[in-house]
Image 1 (cartoon, rainbow over the protein chains, first blue to last red):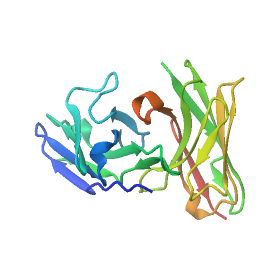
Image 2: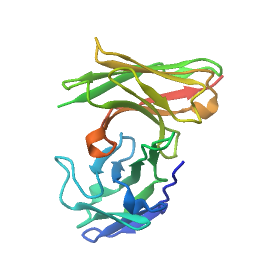
Image 3: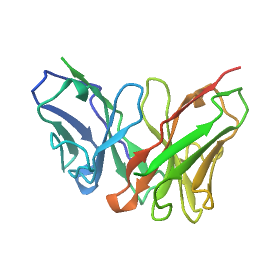
Length: 109
Length: 119
């Protein structure tokens, strides 16, 4: 099945910008979704279809996707952004269509 | 505001069958895929399977021989059964709504159920 690779951790100071990458073979040809999971809570969708935000998600969360890397960018980072972040794609041609990335722990310094 | 509420047994012995149910409140049941996802302690997310309103299901190949997902449209509920559980099945189990129009994003999640398999 398709493999999505994320860095295990990213650290960022409050007010700065965090970038979380998601690597996959020609991932730029797929739609990528991003989830935030705070400690002890269910995941929350923060970006879908590479760069769209669901209702209620701040504009500080943005996404891009090209080549072999998709990126979630969090601008003006706040303490409440500390969480695990997962990317995900939907490969309808596969017998394992729903694939999640390995996850990235974002630490706010 | 669509909500997913899930329930089921939280402690199982090896070889028993895991059984969880998820109810969909305040929203349409058709037009979406209804999914189960799990997360072992300290680890990442693993897709288990999904089912449509009409009952068409597909499963993670690694679990296919042990998993079954069913739907009860009269109650707006869907259920997960996982047979012959072992300690490796210990995880938080989530139900979630997959939105085909959003290229398969999971936009709504249940609260999660911690399932522990221990003798």
